[in-house]
Length: 317
Image (cartoon, rainbow, N blue to C red):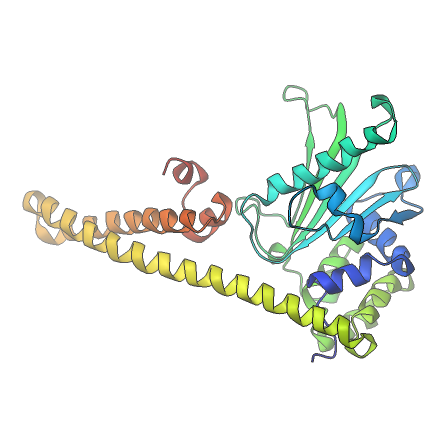
């Protein structure tokens, strides 16, 4: 067992941010990542019992990681997702809509419905065409971009896009939390990081201390290891599907491309024709890879990241 566990594991994530005794860590984290300060800053939260969360999730099997309500009545759904999942962006909207509509069942008027904020920490690239690691999505007027409808907002942190490795580069609390998620399971890196942070950032050190394996019960460690296995199996299936799709696509593409090259070669010379054919074959290979990946259920965004095809090309398949 590792000396320190990984916060990207669902069990560890909930232990840090989903337990009442650690709600000050959750408050700090939400204020830091969602850039809340002044009057909008969160002063207190009420964390929902995770065993009651299916009431929000409906009939879906997935259970929310953390659901809480702040002192302004705003609800926060906080999720940790380690592998790409088809329809994850729709799942985010579904959960937010369920949490929003559920308020009306408590006897509130529509005008009293409070905002729902969905925050996801992702250990994969959800939006391959976006360069920055953080993106926030809201309902805006398409003409003026005015934010008139404030019922929902969605913030996604894509950890693979966060490339700062030197503690001196970490200029904001958001930077420090991203570094924490990426390197918490690496004690040497974390010791250097923790020694460099100011007193105001010690809350991250507290979060790190939660991950000390010797403080966990045997049952908690068993659940952690079980979740690690689930995550590794999911990554292995994805890697196998990608490898198989690439092999099939490349083989078919080269075969088709070579035939096309010979055909073109009768007019402009075999040598040049085969070269052109191979080029077309590579493009065909990409399309075949994309077709195979779509059959595995991978999202169009993830397929684009792996093949280099545009979302339009993939949608047209």
